[in-house]
Image 1 (cartoon, rainbow, N blue to C red):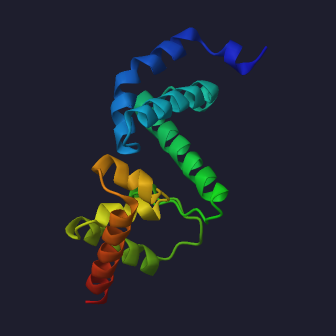
Image 2: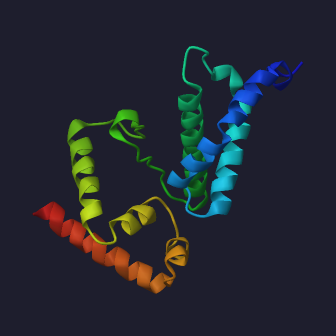
Length: 166
């Protein structure tokens, strides 16, 4: 008997009850509605397949959010590997995952640099570019071409370097 066959149907119902919340949560990670729907589907598939890791004394919503973050990280890791890039996960300080040995100095420098991004015009474009999004993926929702996105990235990087140096 497979583990999916052992999974209680009440568990499936509990997971599906969070579908609207997961759909809303996917907007944090994906910009296009098709990508959001795919992320929700992948998260539900992962959650149902990993149902044995859920602790009954824990929060179902928190566990599902954790599952979604895992799906997003795995997809980003696969994309980076396919493009021949080194994957470095950027997360909040509370749930930071380090691919190299952490140091307090590097953490402080990264936190200070990321804090500057909202004040720099085009900072979120630089962050999306650093996360592996293509120029086309960044420009299409904004209605601008790849050349303009590249110009915005270069200008924002220069501003960021000036802010960090100051």
